[in-house]
Image (cartoon, rainbow, N blue to C red):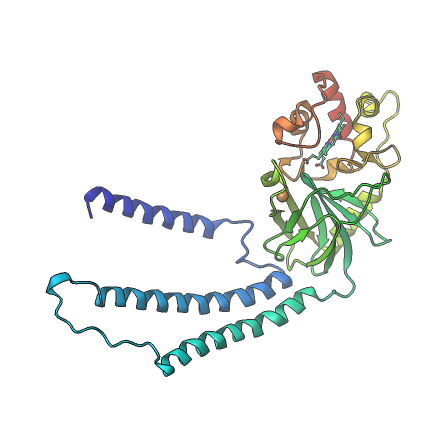
Length: 349
Ligand SMILES: [Cu+2]
C-alpha cells in the first residue's frame, strides 16, 4: 500500500469514527433509543436478531478469508496435492441446511408474536385519523369529547395509547380523495413506520413513556419536498394535554373593526386564503392545514419552520420558494398585505 493510500484509509476510518460518535450524541430520531412500548417491542426483536446476524456474518466472512488465504493459488511453486473435495458429504450438507433453517425458525418464532403484539388494538386509546398530504400531516381527533383538527404537531398525553388510523379513503365534499400520494408516517422513538396509501386504511399505535417532543418525518418518497415533510409528536402530562384540547376547542379569534388584526382578517378572504384554509366559523377551505389555532403551534409547513412572525412573513412572500413544490402558491402579496395577514395569523392561538 502506498503512503497516500494508507493516509486515505486512515482518514476514512477517522471519518467513520467521528460520524459514529456524532450519531451517538444527539440523534432525535434514533430508533435504537425507544421511548414507548411499541418501539421497545420492536427493539426487543431487533437487538437479538442483529446479534444472531452479526455472529453469522463474522463467522462466514472470517472462514471465507481464512480459506482464501490458505488455498490461494501459489503458481508454479505450489506442490501441495489437490485439497479433499467435499461434494456429496452428507453430514456437511445436512449441517449447513439444518443450522440456517433452525436459526430462521427461531427468528420467525420471535417475529410472529411481535407482529401480533404491534397490531393489537389498544384499550381506551385516543383516536386520531391522520391524512398525509403533499407535504404536511393532517390530524383529526375523532373522539367526540375531543373533536379537534390540526396539522403537523400531534399532541398526546404520556402513558396513554394514541390509536392512529391512516385513512386513505376519506373524500372531500366534491368526491376527490383527501389523500394524494403514498406517504409513510414515522416517529422513530415511538414506533416503526406505517405507509399511508390512498384508498386504503392502516393503523398504528403511539405511546410515549415520558413527556417530550419526538421528531418524525415522512419516509416514503412523495415528491419534491418529501424531505421537508416532518412532524412532531408532542407528549405531555394528561393535564397539559387536556389544557391543549380546551385551547383547540375555543372558537377562532374574530377581530372586529378597529382591532389591529382586522385588516388581515379581511385580507384572508379577499386574497384567496379562505379558498384553501379552514378557520372554524369563518372559512372552509380544504386544501391546506386548518388554521383555526395555527399560532398555538411551535412550527409550520410540515414542522419545517419555527413559528414566528418573521418566518410566517417569509412563507407568505413565496411558499414554493421556501419549500420546493409546496401546494401553497405564491400569491404575490405586497409587504403591507403580508404584515397585516401575519398580524391576523398571530391572533389565531
Ligand atoms: Cu414523503
